Image 1: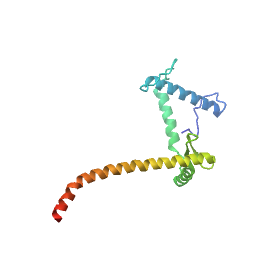
Image 2 (image 1 turned 90 degrees about the horizontal axis):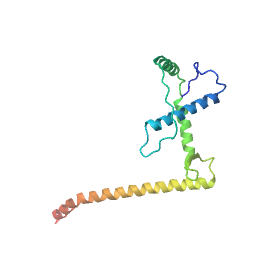
Image 3 (image 1 turned 135 degrees about the vertical axis):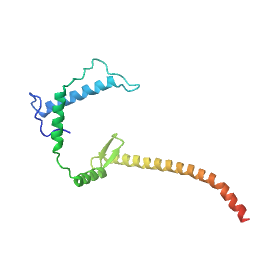
Image 4 (image 1 turned 90 degrees about the vertical axis):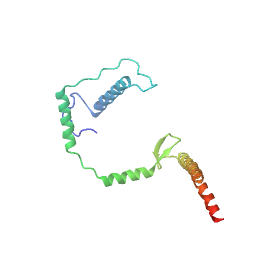
Length: 159
């Protein structure tokens, strides 16, 4: 989330693009630093010099916290019904397009991409059904094993 008003913005920013560039550069620095400090098992550490993270005084941290709390104290009320309706409409129009390797909308996809998407969805459903059938067969075998002595006893009692 971004603040609606940023009274403490650095001087010299000519546009939002400058701010976006600063945010992107900071994100890259943080990810590189995390890769060095917390390496993934089997992963590669980044090559080259990694900058030390800046330290902030307690006063600066308190001022930043006040800015965040001031901004959070007056949130714009969300319309949950409108959000739910927009989400449902978007969800209904979205599908995974395996030819593009991404989620897209029905209206933007080509006919071959739609055919591939529906085939993929059908195959996924078929695989899920086969997995369920295998599980049901295992359960049925266990039930038959447990019930077999009872069936034999019932037949003896009938005779």
